[in-house]
Length: 273
Image (cartoon, rainbow, N blue to C red; front, side, top):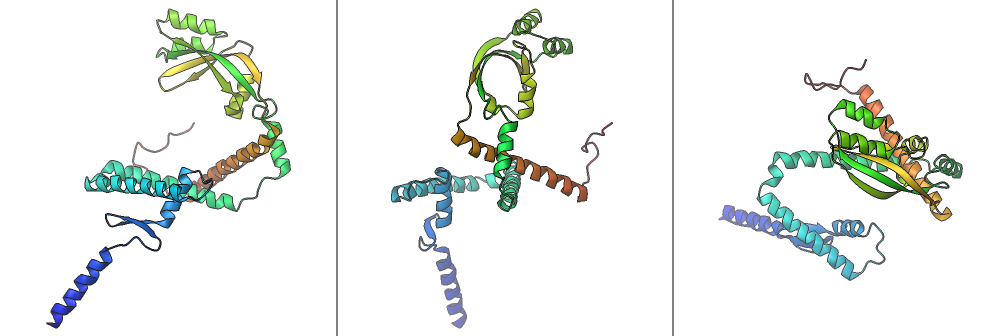
């Protein structure tokens, strides 16, 4: 009898522990899966980019329903065994890697020295395309599939006008389309901008893609200087991004120097001459 009573009590306790309730820090339970207040707050922050005007009941309810919908779909995916598939596990590992890297960077930058006003001013002076001399360029473009013949590629790279590009493509039997677009010089990497500034007026520059090339010529330049009230925040953002890049590069170099890395034959880095 005593054994039966103990067993009954254990079963009752186990059953009760499975009956999760929406109380305290648990704002909802979906098929036994808890949604915490912290998870809901993170959802609201993500939806509003951390700039919610007010923590209204309507906003919280909408965010909670969104989380519930996601949990239901995730539960169905698990029932279908997707969480056990090699594709899921590969992407899960990649996502975990990215999250850990981003959190490491955030932790280190949280203790990094804030750029000084002089550093910000120096950055503005060194990047005219982003600040005082920022412009909006009008580009005339020719878009074409990348030729496989190295001789054709060489001819295209040697062109001095967009018409020459069109003539070479036509004579090579390569069809192309024309396009016009506007481009903000602040979007150029600084090194690329410096190269483009050295081009003669009307000289094309070619940007190859995965399967097509784009030859462009600057046909108009419209001054578009960054307003003074936006310049400092933008410069600070650039400096912080450069801090991130330098931190990652330096850290990877140090870690590689002390790491033991073994490659399967044929997978190692190519030998440099």
